[in-house]
Length: 288
Image (cartoon, rainbow, N blue to C red):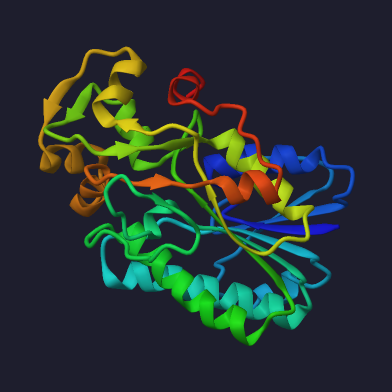
């Protein structure tokens, strides 16, 4: 199997690429990013390229699978549009190249969170207004609905991990937990998922015959203050505005942390055989 991985220069991609390189069923891995990846392996080839380029069609030749690590969006409309254009160019060219397996890494933030009600894969989407990354991913998923309906032949899998945490993670929650600040006055219940368990889900999806969306989250939900306590660092309360500045993110993404979002990940556990190694928040934070 030949596999193309986008966003190959990201920190998360480094652990995914290392895992793919140990897979005996994978003969060639091509990484595509606008920046050079630090990863090296005899079966790995890095291509420095903007995913919106028409040259992507050449790179996709003889690729049996594509793993799209969707890039984070900037705070303006142009940057969010770039995320959609990237996905459209990638999947349209993959379709033309005959690639038969597409794995799209999305996010739980595409859901319209409704308090403590567990969201399954059929729950309504509706990203938090003002969180550019979530809005961009929702726009891509809206487009994928039409793409998948019109082209059922490629097997499309959408993975929707909750807040990603781990040594290589750059999620807003991961960055917040590294700060000595805590968001004031929030009782929202949240989950998270360890980056290594998301890598495991990607590999399982790659070797399965399933299609559709899969939620990825640990089995328990707790409040953000409880997460901070389990991280065992002294925290100082801060406003959402200060945190947005310190974390260099949009205020809407901080707002997303103040809203309860609980996922039902039963489908991934049943159909992918996904059993997260770190299934409690405490265990995830200890290995972050």
